[in-house]
Image (cartoon, rainbow, N blue to C red; front, side):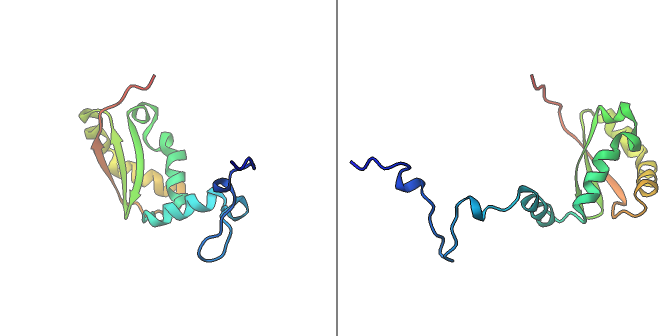
Amino acid sequence: MNSSFPPSRWRSRRTRSGQSNDETSLHPLANSFEALLKNKRYESPNEFVSVINLWSNLVGDRMKAHATPVKIDGNELIVYVDHPAWATELKLMNSKVIERLKSELGTTSIIRLKVYVRAATDVD
């Protein structure tokens, strides 16, 4: 039995392109995250982050407690709410939210909210 450490299966291996797959070839997580967002068809990852950061200003603290922006799909901001009553209220606020978003960001690709009811889950 070979007692060398680390076992050979843990050692760095070369890929077909000849590059090592050890830690020196790892990409920063930020680059991977940005690539993932671009692949998900977000107009701008920064736009979604801005929406998250501004959410309380856009909808108010009461609505924020029940509504969560999930993603930007094309020109729609997808939002999940925890009850149909909140969905109705947020739909009525649609034009004001978009107006506030435009005034905060200057320009935005979002022209409407798309609201879905999702049951809230208890996390303890």
